[in-house]
Image (cartoon, rainbow, N blue to C red):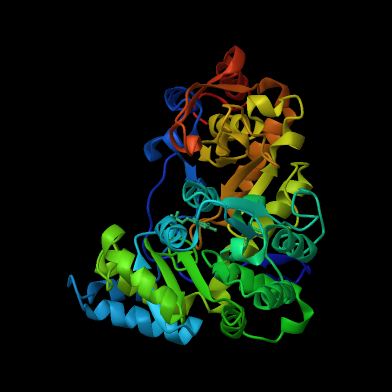
Length: 481
Ligand SMILES: *Cc1c(COP(=O)(O)O)cnc(C)c1O
């Protein structure tokens, strides 16, 4: 939540107290250089003992509430029929308004089941934008993914408040060209992750819904980051200024035939969920769930996490929770802009993003500027971000790199974990690196898995720039920093 100071400026104030802390340490720059070399310049392959602030992802790294932890203590460990499930089902019915709750072990497991049930070779899934695991699952099932994104989605500097909108004409065109029967569903992703955590508007969701309804096509919402999208609707869409987060979420749910989510994000647990009121979809999910995930009442999750998800679903409807990381990200992005760091605007949910093509204009996409920036800022700060650019795109059938629309370096801001001082530190080291941008060079793969290569692929720094960057940093800040 933002609070106004007597000077007139806003600060993202924490609406919670910290009662359990985890110590973190700043490894010296020489240790960071050795660690990133060993990790093949891939921040996924760092160990957390070598990381000061872990901003890789908000997935499974959010702070849990006292009520979530308390709920975990009373969870019911049963293979079948456990009471914890019925609490989750009640929360799904109350908060989301759906009849059926299908737990899965995490978000991508939901995508796997959807792909299995809905997608056939020759199908086309239309969406506002893809997510890595989403695209992989639908394509493995033989479907094509079309991203009918808004015209502003790929502009990293923008004042458009709803860059996550789907382009309605484009959606209509795909349906007309492919034929409605070839479109198994339309997917709207809340707080669209890969374009910088950008929301869609309620008006856009409703218009997409109307098009789907006209053609008998189901609408699916990826609700992983639903509470932030609801918060942005409340703060940016005039008609919703006085509507509660809970009511906005319910209205969003009313537009969809089925939703799924990674519980690791908005609900601050480690698990996933599919929810629907459609009997036919539920029958199919019910058939496959025990094959891939686990019995209907746990779906691969621990009963503790099932319990905590029920609480998390309710808590994400609190204004203070829904706004917690969004307002800190807004502060983070504004401070980056103040210091001349090319941040993606407007600020989104989940993370602050830096446009690597503007930060490192001398590095071509074939040498992975976003990957280079992620590794370079780790060397210069001990902060671990994630590459969201061409490294995150797999090669095409002919073995060619597929240049990503955007080259973003993502600094995830897990919910209720980091402070304003942490953000100031990251901004300062980014500003230093920006002033020394010529020290950063490109990357080249030497180990490359065939699918989702960004997770475990290894690269080398072309011309050995890592060591030169570390030396320049040490000259300015000393060996201990
Ligand atoms: C994280 C995420 C997923 C995948 O969920 P996991 O729990 O990591 O498997 C899918 N969609 C979106 C939008 C996400 O942010």
